[in-house]
Image (cartoon, rainbow, N blue to C red; front, side, top):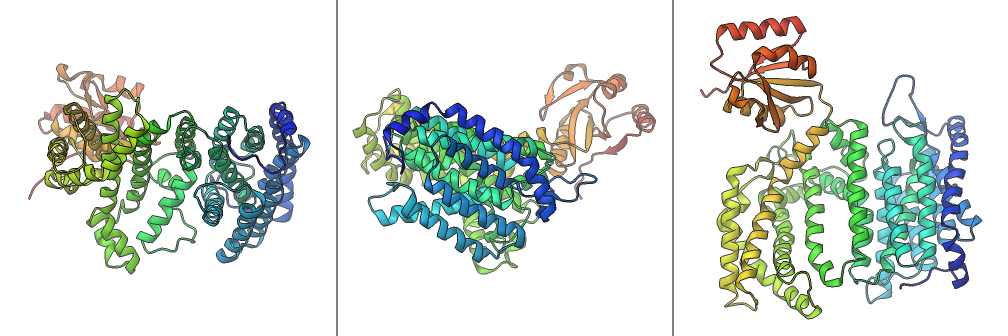
Length: 602
């Protein structure tokens, strides 16, 4: 069932099970009561920062919330006799480092050295050994790196009001649920205390915030959640993979954001430690999302990660192995989409010559040589191969079977990659994938199945006809899903974006579809197509690019009254002069801009 935490006796475990609700209420009440005091203290001491969401009359916001969050967590656990030394001294030391950094802004190496000492002490002397490898020294090193990563990653996502606190509540809730399922009351109690304090803080931090947690809150909370996530993964009994996968899924949002920022800054020749507006939430804002919509998207990703993390505790070891490639694939697609946004305005080729050597290597490997895409495809091929056997065996996979499949997996990749290259899979650009690319995906999948079947006579691969068919089907679907993912994510985000201009397209033919596509791709952060008008009765109610044909020219006033718009985009070449006059009169009467969409080749 996992190693018991220091200071936890069997008698205390019984007490802890009855203290779950009291510690939640205590942490919430203590944080709620102390936060108004923290707001006044932050203003008096000058510990303030520029708010993430500026509004009139609010130039600076106190960044003293971390003291209330950490203090409420420690006091509520102490009241229930569940306070561990690693949390008291480790989180307390992180809090002190954060306060000093908020007040005087430590240099990056000074801040990192303090964090390294704290995480090293906690991993070696305070926390139990997390048996991640057969070697003690390696376990301690990995634990230190993990605690450093979660502390700083959680700090990095504290860039929008309510974002870090909400992600922390979700992560703490998933850890508490997992701990309760396995009877680890002390882990559950500590997680619930953190969740209660953060939930209270959210009432003061939700946009527009009256206080932020600052480094004094983000660093210790990231440290605590990192230790709890490792502990919850350690107590899982269903699969030895859970101890590695669960912590990453629970902390998915901060870890993904940190990875995206690090890769992007290296690829653009920037210092990793610099401050910048290139985090995931900033990229969502640049796509036209409001602050609250961006926060909701990040919370949703965190919730999906938390649910998947909890699910890893109930899957069998064999099914856990089958699910792993799909989890990797989903996380990699989100990361690649965010990284790709860095080159929204400047293409990698334009920036290549101005970059330092390491940035040029990253761009060459990632964009020119498509190494990142090929690496992701290994997860895709693995998912298709393992998924084919799982479907064929109704997910009743034995230990011997899964071991044999893992040994065959490299040979499957050797057979499939040439099929992808032959079919031209790596010639496409994800952001421009269209239906015409489906033929290449189908060809690559069929060739992959053929090469796999032929390779089974030359390589140690055990296959049946039904497995090959399922492999081809899964391969095709996964190729389509991954390559269309960028367009799908853009489309979904555009639907959430707050458009400054609402556009009604005049016409519902091929040129109108091209006009809608132009608005979506080239002006999506500012404009959104709300629909089409056309006098062709057969097109009424039909859908183009996700929007309906709302009516004919005679219904323009009704359409405007129901769904006001700021622009008429004429995308029809055969409109008579009378119709153009009618549109011009309508535009002048309502103050609506009127433009013509044209495609010219010269």
